[in-house]
Length: 202
Image 1 (cartoon, rainbow, N blue to C red):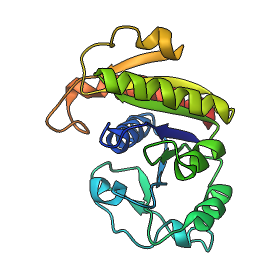
Image 2 (image 1 turned 120 degrees about the horizontal axis):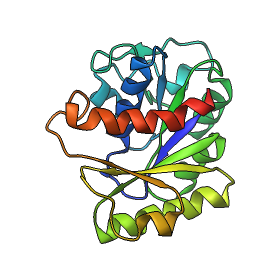
Image 3 (image 1 turned 90 degrees about the vertical axis):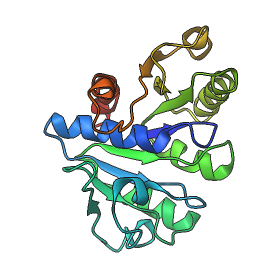
């Protein structure tokens, strides 16, 4: 499982998770994207799927939803889950396919729970001083729970912010801005690169 994490809301975690899922579909994989943000879930909205059934019914075998926005990728929305539901769902997720965890922002226990369950993580940041600081804090949080940081994605940016690679000691991949990032040519190469960091988890 690859957790897609970031310290700041609106940094592009959900879009990045879906973009990486789309790149995995191009590799003939069948990724599953799970909404772990139980307080402010929006994966179902971005992926164009119903909110229910979701994480709260995952252990009972509730089916995931194929995304019409990213055909070939399945989505497990938050539903009406609580933390215990999420713990059970994370423990029952399939191991034979790529799984991406769309995590909540911040450094609360809610953010740490899926990060702790993941095999590795992808940190999403913005090209700003605050974004770089958040990326450094999120990287430290991942290391504190022994979850390796595979890469840092800088959303809506054509460049790597100064000092970010050195501060996080991870590969930094800029994802250019695009009006429709999940279908734009400008972003496809970046998402394909990021998908390479998800593949070792499968």
